[in-house]
Image (spheres, rainbow, N blue to C red):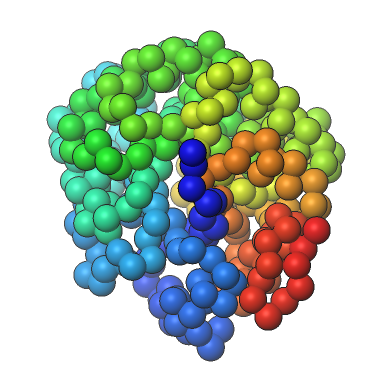
Length: 330
């Protein structure tokens, strides 16, 4: 029997973040407690541990992720040269210039994450080149990507203790989109680590259907996809809970790639697709009842921590969870 669901929020350690939290008048610990949450899902996108430990708060850790990685793994020099014309550019993106160095970097990232003694790790399963981000003309199938991703994971899985759960996250790019049950099954059949599951990102799944018009549409769509997984729906152990209704933008943006596009411009484009807004409709409770996750991560976009606090409280209320000092939602 699964334990009581743990409600968390996403937290990334970047310069100035601690001061940003303190502007709310609370420490990070007080921020968590004030919302009645159980801790954080800590983003560890580095190869060395943080100077300060988050072990007391970090229930889960999100590992580093390279949206474009297949060419590096396959030593596809032609593709790498096209997008990273210099060794410096290649080094900047991957932290190395060759596959074995990249795999060592993944191992180091895992080791840094495990310092926090998390219950689970999150690993993205998707591939998208810097061009495909804009054109949506994907060169690889979901099955091809999950097969390669499983091979990469298995190369480094010995770094992860058996008692640490690994949750693979869906995106809307080729890979583990969750929209094809056969692909989901094929992926997990290839994984050697036994303690695994799915971190279902609700916004990412909503991004696979640009016709969705409302939160309720999104909830019903997610429930349909989950039901289609059959017995594999039991693999869903966590939710990255957020809402994305970006269909209008997806249907209208120009499918053109500019190789002079900056990282900032690319991120602005991705954020317009992947909105990470809070659910406000109590229909979201249908997801919680149907999936019964162990972890619900309120993974939301925010301008500052006062804004973040309000967004989390809004989504908690939609979930029917009591916020200390507030009213019960739903």
